[in-house]
Image 1 (tube, rainbow, N blue to C red):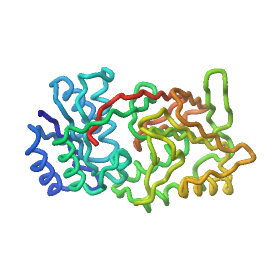
Image 2 (image 1 turned 180 degrees about the vertical axis):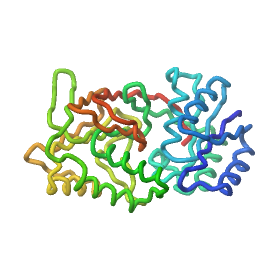
Image 3 (image 1 turned 120 degrees about the vertical axis):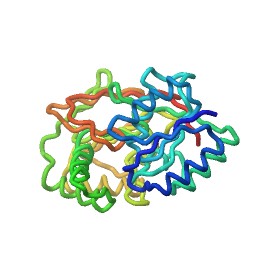
Image 4 (image 1 turned 30 degrees about the vertical axis):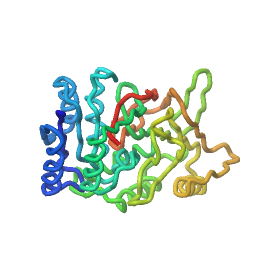
Length: 307
């Protein structure tokens, strides 16, 4: 079996020692070509290369960002039997994709499980999402959550580490000091139906949405790789309502919103979110810049993963 091992050396929980251990372990089962990413977008080029060279498997070490880049490269010409199998070893701060697949959070333990699965030949087809022409494996967001991620990326460029506490502090600060809580910019469009006055659109391809340390944060607990997309779209950011959303995300308990302030949808094949002003978009936890409208689509059985 020929494989490409894509390593993000800047991932939060990755170290040279961990990389060395994993490379030696995988090399016992795979004819492995190890490549370290050097710049943003490098993972996309490596995914395309894996397809062009007819690799059997691509293994990533890093967080959701490098998984997203590689998947977009693998699927640059669409799904099909020409696309290599994907395996991922968690090495980032969130690792939503890896944890949603049931992999251990520890990179070495996850590698041990992947080796067992390689020996048994176990693989699973999963559905993915698309935001316009870009694939996402776990989730995308349009509005407030993407604003927080953009702010976090500014902090990381300034040399600050992305910790759960810093994410929480940035979210609270952004809510009270920066985001517009009175003028919702978004509208949801599904066929002839249009829902106005939406502040935030979280689109999940799997559950949970993210983690605060070890605690899952789950706006759409029914989301699954085996169904379409799920949507969580608040229509109010008043403090009392925001606290209700947080409670729902932490406890997975449905709360009632008699004012019609929360729109949720399950198993959607397609939905479009329009913006009245340029609004931040995030894809798999990375900022995708400003947009004025995004169509999200579900693509069933788009990729086979080792899990």
